[in-house]
Amino acid sequence: MRRISLQAAAAALVGLLGASALPSCAPVAVVGAAIVINDEFVDNAQTAVVPYSLDYTWACAKDTMSHMTSDLIEVDEDLRTIQTYVDSALVTVQVETYDAKQTRIRVAAKRYLIYSDEIATSVRDSLTRDIN
Image (cartoon, rainbow, N blue to C red; front, side, top):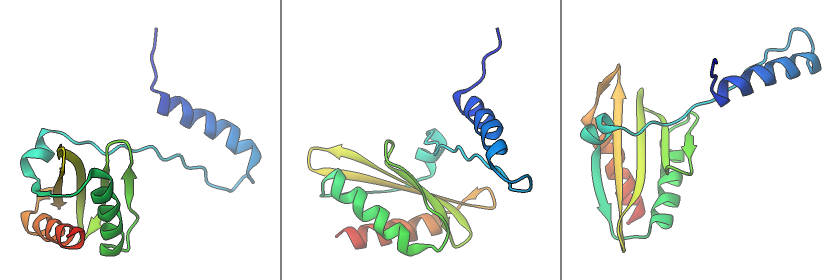
């Protein structure tokens, strides 16, 4: 028995159904992306712990990141992660509970497939400055 992912099935269905409803020259695109947080991210991330609630820190992080770039921002509300481009680097921000009254912010930046501590530190500092 062959298995296909839910995303692949959805893409095929939208492609088939959408194609009949659109003019023949209209492009059909299905976007499905997930922000992956793995050990490589954790090992290369710049970290800060702030003395604020998770919800407050998350809201501030989204606001700050929206002002740092003119590119699209990919937000995953469930994982509390943000991805966008800042200074030509793909920046990933993760916000998570550290303990009862503190929240941890992790920031990693990749430019040309190499982690950039300089950009990650700059973004982390901007986030903590705006949150405080």
